[in-house]
Image 1 (cartoon, one colour):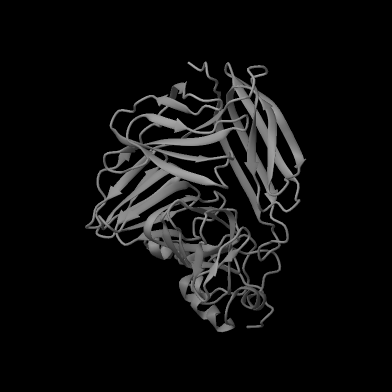
Image 2 (image 1 turned 90 degrees about the vertical axis):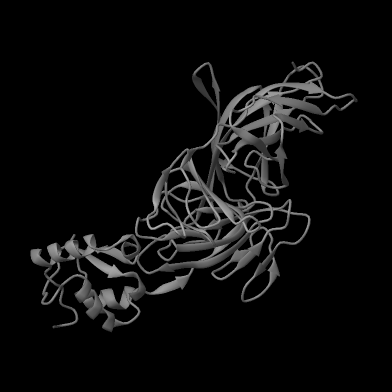
Amino acid sequence: MNKTTTFVFVLAACISATALAQTKDSADENSLITYKIKAGDTFNQFAQKYLQQPVDLNEIYKVNAIRSIDLLPVGAELNIPRHLLKQRASKATVMSLSCNAPIWQQGSSTKALAIGSVVTEGAVIEVPAECHVSLLLEDGSVIRLPSSASLKITTLRKNSLEPAPEVRLDLTKGRVELDVQKGRAKSTPFEVRTPISIMGVRGTEFRVGYSPDDQAGQVEVLGGVVQTRGRADSKASALTGGLGVPIDANGKALAIEKLLAPPQFESAVATSGNNPSFVAKLTPVQFASHYVADNANTANLTGNRSSQNLLAPELFIPRVTRQATFYQLSSVSESGLIGSERQYAFCAPATDKPKRCSAIFDAPLADEAPIAFTLSQETGGATHTLVNTQNLQAKNGRFAIQGLPIGHYKWTLSYVLPQTSDAVGNPTVIKQSGTFELIILSAHTP
């Protein structure tokens, strides 16, 4: 066989490869990558570009039940074992960090993290109490580590065929929140493990928790689908958005639950003083054991961020100014599942007129890159776009939107991470979005 000869893929081979793939379980499916033949492809070119060794072509023949091939037509598909492909290290970039003490990355070398720090495979990140860190992967997926989390990035690498990195995370303490890019191929693994559970995901937003003290865990899905099983379970369950499941100390997944709704703001009462603080009353949620309030001075909850557990549906809001302070509220079930989220922005202008406030947004990695930003207000069932620009500039990693009246807001921002790209030259793009209800407080707030 001439090395530059292209090959014919006969129908029988297609049928055999399909039948072979259908017999694989979910773990094996993740080890096979489908490659679609392009015009001009040759085995020699394919081996040099994608495979670790040209001799690995023999294993590809076996996997696809191919014995004698001369030409492969354009569009035919080959199943390629993942371990045969060339691989390179991928990286995660620290995109936000809130802590008064150093947060250390342990691995081949131990060093303190900072905005823009690069984290690679094998790193172990220990987050102190009252600290938060978020990491940006090369495909735009985001890993958030709240207070007191301990996480090992066991696998973080890219092969020569897939644009998204292969990711395996081991959570040994605390919680991890993930926003996985929806464009990832089904065959590209993104797995989260704890000592008692295993989660396999595609494009989705979800959270995983594990407490080594009581050896219990939780999985909460906000969007997409997560395949979840306890270590002692023989089968995984598919959790969709709005559902969660507790994992017991024996590694058994318990009954699937619907996530609780967040508490809602009802009213606020000012404390005494020239610059008063406020106590906000929240609507109690049935079956909630307590509530969680995360707060920061930016709409995307980065920068200085703190978290508190509320045993009663009341929230203390200190030091309110014209610049909004943001609170993300959630309810916690008796089984420990944290429910869906609702975000409020509280502010208090120095004068009653005009009753308008400012909101700060964080873009710490923009580095003078133009930011695409939209801000819309929803009133009376209609949406009004207040800001729509492709060339917003951040100063010191932040920008402010002034003159916002009371109301419900929806926002998006995106920018290209400077001087970054994947193996085929695609830039890394940061994309964020969110909503908040702006509440303007005063000494006369009902």
